[in-house]
Length: 142
Image (cartoon, rainbow, N blue to C red; front, top):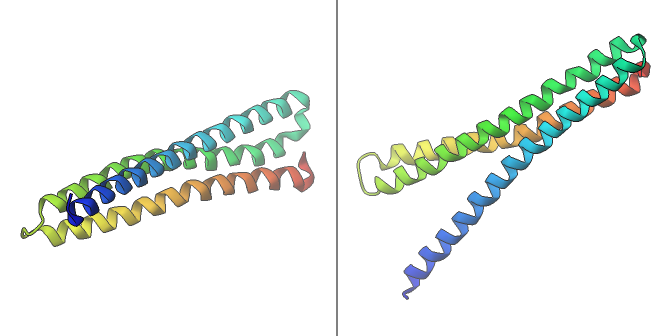
């Protein structure tokens, strides 16, 4: 096997691992945000059963559910964008030496950057939800 062939094989293997890791991250983000939303729903249900005086706290804690839901939606969107990133990479490879190679290269870079932003937003939405729950609990309402 020549040096170029070895390089190509290493690149293929590393690319596959990067894609697998990104998909695992996004699936985990969906699971964590969805689980947090379910946990907050259970918390709200237990508060609601305990006493009607906590209605303001319920509203504050329930607002966090929207952040967790947005985090889960961002994870699903991230998986779709990851597919588009792979598609753009393949299109760039297919256009190698062609007239549209630069165009597809730019599309690939843009979609890749957008995928990174969406992936980071899953963590940001989770943290916003956590801080919203903390704020509602520590504000003295609960």
